[in-house]
Length: 402
Ligand SMILES: *Cc1c(COP(=O)(O)O)cnc(C)c1O
Image (cartoon, rainbow, N blue to C red):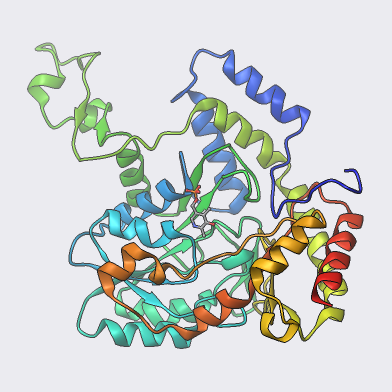
């Protein structure tokens, strides 16, 4: 990449093999709901170590399908850390469930056991059905502790793992697990949007080890429609008098959605998945370079706290800047970095502050999330960056921070 090119905060890596894979899929018989989807799902499950993977057309759909598979409905309550993308909370709302927003650690943006405890206390007598920890930036929430706190209460866990494809986390005494293996959760959800660790354009995946959850998600991904004769409820309509299944027949057994992903998107997914080890390795290298070079900018700039014992593959490289101390607003810093060719983004405005949620649940006091949000900036991180690009970003930051 040329020394003067603009560095966005994230972007996809598309190579000739990806183009060839998609071109081939576009010339096949099925553009959607063909054999490419199942192939991609199997490869994805194998890559993260889960029994099942359900591919859908967005990370949002993946989260919604997971909420459906837990049977979330009106009257249920879920706990969501407020420092996340909108979709984590919205997925529960799509099912009619209510969201209790948990605070997060101000220096990592992640749900802590103490914040979870406080959220459980706020739930009072309401039945909390699930918690959705978010592996913000690619660092895992403290899964072992969160599991220990919730399991005896019958509270299920859906991981929002959209940032954490490739991360390995502590899963108990001296054992580790890949994010997506669901070692300490019911399900894990991934996004395959272009800025994420790998892409299918738009796309998502939910992983699980539970055959019932898998089946439910497959049903709801496509209109609640059943084509398998052994599962027909209307035997008179589904079968001819001679006992043969009617070849045209399908039935709708639940109110589902069209969350299907195309075969050509899955062809891109399969091709990207083959390169996932390289993407992850490159993200780790770039992260180590940033860690080493940014240390000199403390205390005006701090890097996000890691989760002890994890081997993270970061989706975002987040820094926390004391804007008051440097005497510049965040907007000014963003503009000055942009002028130096460095793209940034803020992840995220705490979701409880969004007008929709403010109208629904009123004003909440979650100071850890506010503190993280006020200082956060995501700087460029994607596999095609060079080592020199990292130095360029750090030099730009040094210049702007003064
Ligand atoms: C990207 C993302 C999503 C939603 O994924 P889409 O594919 O854009 O629908 C959900 N949660 C988090 C934390 C994300 O980063």
